[in-house]
Image (cartoon, rainbow, N blue to C red):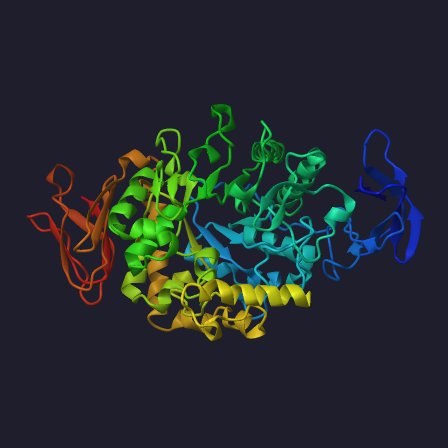
Length: 589
């Protein structure tokens, strides 16, 4: 088989290390910086590369790292997995996503164990499972955002074969699979790329140090490296989409940006495979160009996370005003109404948190609402809190039900974070397993200092390196059958079913969404076609003036959450009475 590596940093020679023996490699003709050689190898054969007589390093394009990021690579032969399901693909339109972390989703913390639970998600009604990053990282436990080897699968999760089994099982349940990938940084621990070539550049700096090289000399090959990795996930593992982490941190000054190149390559692969593929961006830019088609001058990605919706909803539910919530705290229901009807809250307005204006206005004609992901909780928004506390730690079941109603009947593509559907009480904390003692200490100290500046005592901050922090973050699945969790689970299932059966709930036209609210009384009502969704976030009953149905028609209750008696449709005066922390979905007759 052919072994090749891009190693322009090598001055004189590159050697292939294969099961303990080394053989010289030749410069590849017509491919500057590339070296290659032929050698016999079988599945699992260990190999690596030595540059100019230096230490053996893993293959930058390694498909498997059975001994961790610092060990040798292992040969993965062309697909030997026998796929059981002929999958036509499942696009993002009308989707309901479910974000999960393999290590804490089940007691076993493996892809195979998670695959065994996919029937529960299909029964819930979600359409796609979004996996947090799977690339290898040092140690066994972590969020995955410090991964290396962007073509490989973390071995403690089960490695490449387990991911194929997971995807195959998901497809058998009718579920698409999305993978979170990180292109804005790698490592730092276990990152051997700088020894091979200019994968990073000091032309730009990021919170993680030198930027990934997308525009300096040598960047053509770096782009090809990242692009090839992304396409391999979609092609070789039959994934349906990728979530791109923090694309605002991709420093790229070239006229044709990496994101445009990647979206074009994914569209071409989709046409070649004859099944839908898509990219979702995490972006802090509030720029509709992220999802505007390339032919209209945009980047051409399918969707982007909408943190403005999250922040407005979180502030309305909790009253918190620290950090970026300050921008939404003065009038949280007004902020929520603005995001529900305009997409972004900051669309060219002043952000006190940033100390400047932020964002660009969304054209509802050019930007369908399904191009935004809407959510009440994510791994970031929970895990980056001091204690990793979920909304369920402080909110009543009724408030959680109201949040679910706004997410699952809202105009955006909804996403849930694992356990949210039953109001899980387990925290989701920041945990690591760095094997480098200096890095481990720096991370632990940095976490304590960060939150100490916000008034937290150091002893209260969970140590990311402590295994107990990881263990606390595992889901307690026994909660699902106990109250109030069982009722919340049924409520989420009911709302998702409504989303499938009521076309108004998947109408992508933001201009048709109408919102009324009372900031002081803490109620909000959303009209979507012939449907009206009302939530009362206050601790007392509220009369919500909805008016009669369209043309004076009456209304019927499709779904409701109430503490005691279910709410009745509006009377002749058009006023809907909702109990405290209650919500209802109404349909005009």
